[in-house]
Length: 339
Ligand code: 26A
Image (cartoon, rainbow, N blue to C red):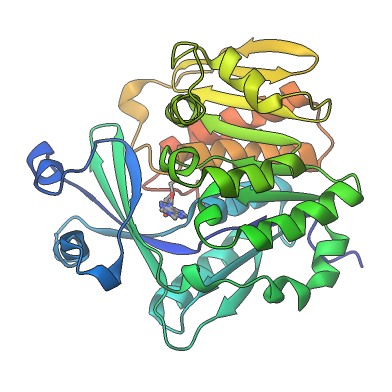
């Protein structure tokens, strides 16, 4: 079974519609400069207008997105073709075709569940300086069902590690738990990214269902702060070590990795805490920050899949994040750069 992927990722496939906006535009829709939110097409949310407005801008870019799908392409960038598989749900439209072809180009094997009456999800990526505000209409991604995993269980069994976008906690905690249970029973690494502050805040019980299966939890400082708030932790919201210890709990298997922009990455497990400096790139080399965290996760996962140790996997993550920061959106260089 040499050609089944080693890494399986699960998430929400989205097409990113990316453009630069000004602060007034963000304010008009009460958006923060750096955040990720959901809009609901069915409730007459006025923020649905953003998509039309962005599509009609002269400087718009259509790029493959979806946080875990970005990570899958990142892992494939370091592992090579056919080593990474991705599960998610799409519609039958040009957006899905674009995502499928981007995955193919990246070497990711797509195991899409296809909906015939809902369009592929989209994310307006609104850039101001080095910030990105992500406004998502999940569309078909919201209709992923666990039975799609059953239909591809041979891939699940063949995989040696799993990566889950925390964003998927809003869609199918059941599907995540299904993979988690398999990973746990077979001693395979199970990696969860918290993805956005609203996940620990509003999807706490789904998160609690999934956390027991995790062997690695990846998050950034704002997701850590939101977690601390959600659990009413007494520590300051930027005390990343204490927050990470809470997530590790009494597990001897779990490692928590908090990225913190240019500040050192904080790594906590029952073995202790490490602070790992990042290799900053010059500010003027940054094109945009959309997908940088996903790229970090992609390098990290790609490292683990090659049996690199923890620190080397984190280093690979930081290296890949630096490459993605220099591309438009959650993308990687067209020509392969060697680590
Ligand atoms: C459920 N939500 C809100 C989302 C997302 C999402 N991916 C999955 N689910 N909201 C934004 N993204 C993706 O995050 C990437 C940057 O980290 C965007 O598509 C973007 O590519």
